[in-house]
Image (cartoon, rainbow, N blue to C red; front, side):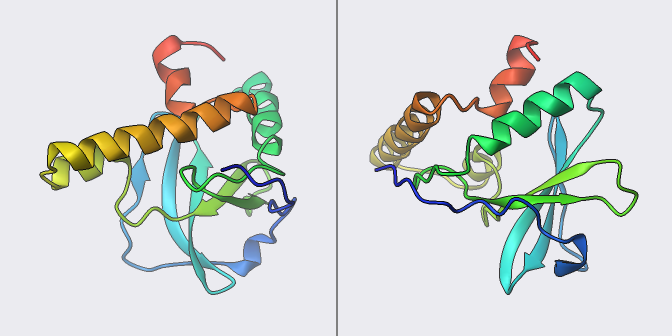
Length: 146
């Protein structure tokens, strides 16, 4: 399931990321997800909101753990870029066309066998993340840690 190969670009020049006019931004607890294009691929630019200095170091360290990690049930990280004002690091990752899990489940009525299959896939992705000491971001907001 997990393949160890270098897949994370250390730095993506901000100029190579093209905004997509009219695309909907998604706001989360820690960040805003903005759709964009990079090297002909639709990506999501994760823009952190209100990150204190110590949290920024922890997040950067967490992202680096993805360097040699790939699992088909986990969103692929492409690299990091720096905002034009050089204050904030942005994360560039593959774009999830159907949004987050909450948005998807709110939009579609699923049969129980499909829900079960999705639950198993999610559990497998989380297991692989935890096995590689990668924290799932939404857990941070609920536990109050970091």
